[in-house]
Structure formats: structure tokens, C-alpha cells
Length: 377
Image (cartoon, rainbow, N blue to C red; front, top):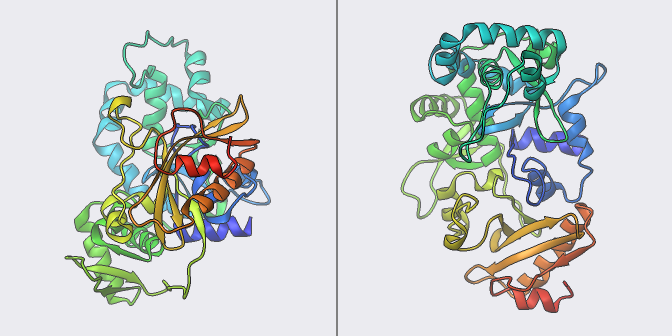
């Protein structure tokens, strides 16, 4: 848990996503950095006990994310903004009684899922007419209350549903007792968290991490430069200011390797990724199959300080295999890329509880023959 905590302190958030092709999105960045860890550690971190308060809570940070409870408090201004305008505010005005009733149910029965709440209310789900959200009035009210901070996610169920409870029953007591910060002070702290996670980043990088607007971020960066937390530096080939966190350090050598999820913090900001590592990366989950270039769930492969390949993976839990549906080397990938990738795929398969790494018939990419030759099925 100490390793997990140090990681959380460094990167600041774990994005959540419902796609479970390999593993849940928030689990993979920890594997990329710590190796085959015990995933129950994240479960413990997001639940907590009276003796050991939770280390993670859920809110809209960089999309839906797990964040430390202290960071949740730094987003109170965002909750107030949701209360004043936007979809949550409009629904509050349209159906105020639903919000009151839902809050009463959560207070009495929480933690409860949306399914449990709309059953208690007697709301039936309407016929599904498209691929998008199909929310009941209860679900809308729950999400509105979540957006404005009236309720929080106590945990996720085995089906990955949020279980909601009153915020004061979710946040640790020490956090609840802490002072309220204004928007300006909160944004400064959020930008510092972003800068610590990046080490080196542009204004756009630092804003994107918590989905902040550029102008408040610019003001926060100016404050952090003036107070010695950030330093403006030059990066060869970059045509805009770059900021270095003064606690960032550059190792003499880099010898690690890692498979990076599509929702890994390293790949959040695509321009930075391309300029630092030379990889033009796009998530193709929502691209029609016949238009995908590299595959459905593609993980970049980091070797040393370079991104050298990308692989489309799927955990076939029924058959017990990690499927390699495509494997492409990047330009100037070093000799030995296939061997290193095969080794990391075996580590991932073992961590996922899968017995084999399988390159099925029809797999695409120039690394496929080498991966097959290295002993994958």
C-alpha cells in the first residue's frame, strides 16, 4: 500500500472507464508503474475503514476519476458551478421533487445503486432506443446530486455500478473538517498536482489534466512560477512556453518497460505525447471496425525512454488467454523490441490470471511473426 500511495501522490488521479477489454482502466496505470501488484490494494484504498480512512474517492477530474479525498475538496468550485448552470442545474429546476426524494432514499438506505433507487421509487426503465445512456428519472437525479457534491460514490459494485451515499459519510472526517478553499486557491493546487504528475508540460498540458480552462490555469502557473514551484524552461523544437516542476528529476538511465492503457495519464495530452515520444496516438474504440488502423484497445509499449510499439489486446477470460490482435513496431524501434514486448505480455497475462499469451489467426502487424516465434500460442 505504501508503494500505491507514493504512486497516487505522484500522478494525482486514475481515470475510470467502463471498458473492460483487458482490465478496468484505473487498474492499468498502476500495473504499468508498479508491475504485477495486488489489485485488492486499490479496492482497499477506495473503501477505507474507520481506522484507515479511504485514500481515494470518485469525481469528475479528468473525466470520471479516482482522486485523493483532499483533491475532491479542491473541486468544490466545480460542484458549485454544476449547481448554478449546466445540465444538473436545469434538471434540478425541472424536477426538484425527484432530487429531494432521491436524497431522502440515499440518506435512509445508502450506499445504494441507481438500480436499487429506481426500484424503491417504482421507476421502470424505458425501452432502449440507441447506444447511448438510457437513464431513469432516478438515475438523472442521482447523477445530478453527484455532480453538485450532495452525494458521493461510496464504492463500485462487481458490475461497476456506482453505489451512492451522502458525501459526509464518504469523505474522511479529517477532510470534512478542513477549511474550504476558494476557486483561485483550489486551481493553484490542482495545477501543482498536474505539474508534479507531468514533470514537464505546457500550459495546455497542465490545464488538461483536471479539465481546467486556460485562463485560470495561466494565472495559477504564473503564481507557481513566482513562488518557485515551477520554472519556465526551453525545450528544443517546442514553439511555446514549457514549465518544469522544480522537484522533477531526470534519471541517468531509464531501463524499464511498460504497456500503457489508452487512459493512462502519460497519453492524456496527445500533442505532448507526439512531441516527446514521436507517437501519433488515437483511441479507436469508437471508430468503426473497418476504419481502425491499429485496433480496438491499443496499448503503447514503453521501452526505456521510448515508445517503440503498440498492441491491440483482449483478455479472453473464458479461454484463459491474453489475445494479441495486432502488434506494430514504431519507426526505428530497437532490435529486441519483440523479445521485450513478449516478456511484458507474459507478465501482464500472469497478473490478469491468464495462462497464455495468444496471437490468433488474423492478427495484424509487423511484430506478429516474431511474437509467434517467441513461444506465444
